[in-house]
Image (tube, rainbow, N blue to C red; front, side):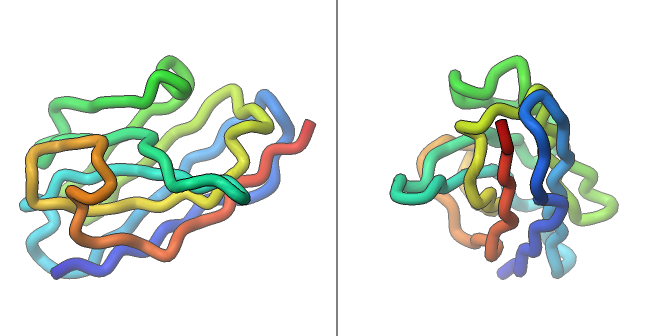
Length: 123
């Protein structure tokens, strides 16, 4: 199993940028595809981005393409989400997740979840 801890969220002005980090415990991090999801107040959790075990391929939700970038550093047991041109509709709790399947945007395919980090975008 793996334990995940997110960090890097905060309050930013629209148009600004953030880098979210997710650090995993354990020695088997490279066995997992990783994803980022977000959940806005009153909304269901939705897919944001995913990355393969090696970090060679990424997938993004249509709503964030061109603004979000996912990356990973297996030597540091970490995955990152760079967010540019933040918009008020990006306000949500952001979660990282790990899964043993091939990289996917399906929430139920992920096996382990962090506690989330809050991103709030002011207008």
